[in-house]
Image (tube, rainbow, N blue to C red; front, side, top):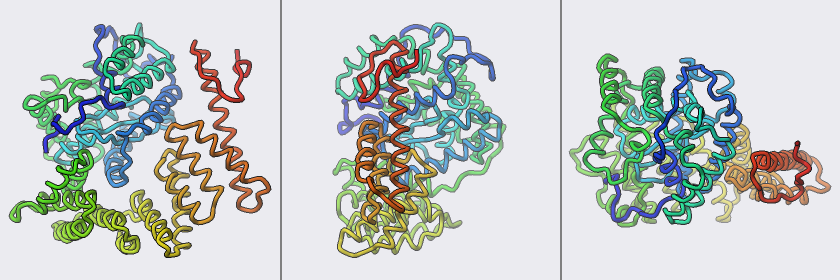
Length: 541
């Protein structure tokens, strides 16, 4: 399956992709920016907190975009690569205590066929499915994430805002969000006009990384990659692959190379590092092969493409185990999406039998195939059978993917007339624990709202709905749900009284956030939309 544009690929600009691509690629004036040395205070007008707030503001819009993908299985894999890199960066001294506390360190996925990854202010790193589908190993994939993480740890976005390119964070946020809105209109001219009208030169200063920054990200990223236990050769292999792919077939499918120019110098340095690094320890191959196939299926769900994958079944009988396993996995997932559940069950079962034959065994890969079988059975309306498979998972059984799937199975059992009060209650408590540790997880909040409501915890369900809306960028909707919770909690006692108190406190917090945003916008010279209960006189002078 080619990763470049095809007749089936949508040619209209996607909201998020266009916004970021334009922001990275526009070249209005040559950059006249002196790169400060490491540790130099060249970002005095962009604090860590301000950068994080900008990132959060942009992320709320991204989470509401159709290309944003919350696939629990792929997200678990992405975090299994990204978080060790963050830990290695901490150990190497690249993340100071204040930076660690302020930034999110959160990767996310976009359902895009193009090969791309990018860093946003505040520690957010975006990954296109096309990138995972292109990489042949987790070492190659990790090399790209290590590079993007280095852009974050070195604060390249903030550092590139110095000198004449300085702009306030609020103005930059308005520009980024304006690009998202313009792109959503499916009119590229509107997006181009938004750039011109919003000081395109500052975009280069804010987001277009200089060659010095690219070399710095390569150097620090390489060290981070090796310290995290990945094969250092992964970076050189990825550079070689990108260089070859873009020369042979880049019909707009490799925007990564627009914002990260792959110069001869960068290629040579990567080759030299790989030559002197030794062989390194390669990561287990099967799990990445499965996630590579999952990405390929999810990034193009055209029925004809899915049917072709189903027809290919397990591939050639004499093919290597990795290729056969990947083919079975892709075929099973495709059959499930096509609602051919009996065929999907058979293919997933064959994949499970095959992965158990691997030598040495790969428990994580076996778990991913088990989760596929659970997904197939849930889609087929067999929650009890899905729970049977979940009960056999021994590796990270309390991870996000099993947690969400178990909650869905409990809900489906109840909706099917099979009472499951204990399962619902257990899932509700497990989800409550999860969101306490991961408060930006909109998917988990949404699932908690459903299980809490079904289990009879009405106020907890309302609060979870509000949090899901807040994380997704709908602050007004979140406030409305909290007010509804207040109204329903009048006269509450016992456990409901505790929930009512949480709702009251959270409502005050969100209202205070609204007031601060309104006042900040006015202080920056803007004319923000009126907010109920917020007056101009409420803003400090």
